[in-house]
Length: 298
Image (cartoon, rainbow, N blue to C red; front, side):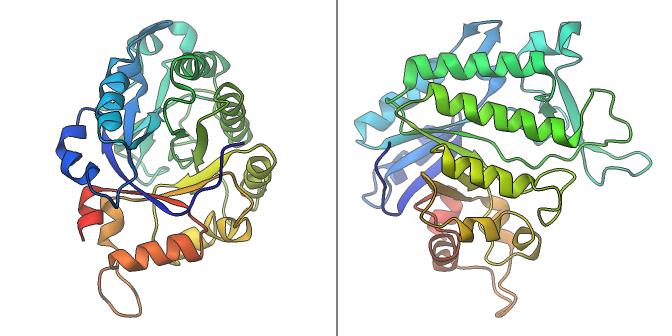
């Protein structure tokens, strides 16, 4: 089992942008960097992998005597961001490979806000798990940790033709988590969790089942948003983080750019750096925070 840690601060960036935070990486207050890599970047064709971006970033981090956390991204937030391997989009066996995410799903003509891989499609999931296996074979014990992206997705279930179901999506995500934990025997494995589609306030038991599974299987959990006592989060993942304080392998939360737009309802002011940290550590039980550069410098 990986050793427990005190609160660590990491800077997070997208792949290709590590140079932009190298000054911060050299700070004694920063323990490492989290880099987000898209599935498309890492797999060029079936079982043909391009790990050069990770190798490049790992070398920079090693020189700085810091740690690297790798996020593998299979969902994307932009109308043109179809960042999965091209074969998933073109081979009919994969049913298109991705589905669109919508702003305000269910409206007459909802705009596309992004895309997500069809993890509920067993063939798509098999390809994703092959990537995880290959990453573990190369980087287990070399990178500090690997995390899978947030559970929240927004698809138009009324128009969906991909075979999506609420239970199918939950089961698929749990299957990916279990596989990641199995193949990464030394590095931390963290699943981001904020919301589950179709669920509110654990009314389907997805949130409680995930936390119980994580605690029993040495899986870390985290999330992309630290917003103190945000109402929507307090009806979803936040109370479970509080309930499971000290029971999870690792709790790794992120303070990202959108988080900086929230205001403290008591003061009317934007949340301060210390307020994010105090809530993450005190209520959520975080022992690692991924900061955007702008959040860290606030």
